[in-house]
Image (cartoon, rainbow, N blue to C red; front, side):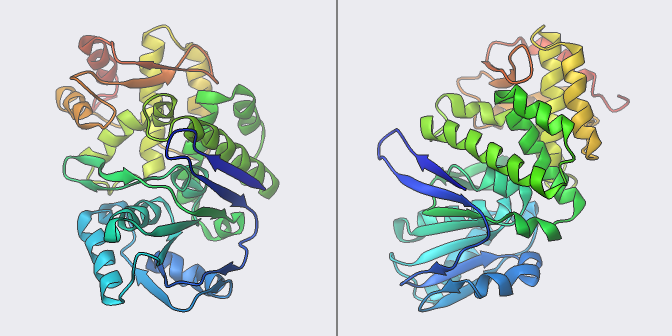
Length: 351
């Protein structure tokens, strides 16, 4: 299956997302594969038997969100300089969302920009992180606050890579799938509720629909000036959870699951979402052992962290919420501080 990315805003660009068995990849330029020891240990031989290039450099970086830093990116760049890569060279991101974000960012700044390709190996990266051109790293202030919009030349999604994915990592990816359904497609949410999402046929359909939905959004709004912000449902809260826990307690998708439940609680409080539908979403998350509670020790500190989020502007916090029912959405930046803090208090340390 081919899902096209056809960006409608200048400069107009096109590339394909291929959902199928990994094809043979032939390049007439230097290639560096950026990965981590876990992915390389499991899948390096499989990529190598399909990859042809005059020179191939393997760059392995530490595994984990806590290593998604400028220091790691500078290490990637140093390896490229040492190997005398030029502006015609290519990077391949071979791993999950952390690898994709850092590889894309490195590609965007190496000699003012070289090409890169995404070969995502986790469910989260296949359905979300590899699609749309967001790149970046974290710092002590927050998540992805240093980065760029930089589109890959191609994305190759092979569901077979998921067979070695640990259950916890797989569930983290499901959080992003559920996010897409809640925001855009009630029928898709019904499908997710009705199927075992570990079944291979269901997995292929789930990936295809998630990618198609995200492609539709990115094609309209590459740089998140409008509808693309809706993809951050669960993230405004989830990024604070990740920051408060040093990016080490929760996987990204787990933090998003918690953030979705928090966003839903705010939507219920505002009368936008029924308690019944909020419980349906929470039940689907819990079915795959995703966390849905986080004890907020200091409501005021948690609230202040919102202002470090990229989506906040002019002192106003932008909240992405279900817009009345599953499959709809609303963006609000006018919610009273007292109301938000009242909702946050429900997730207090004893909650």
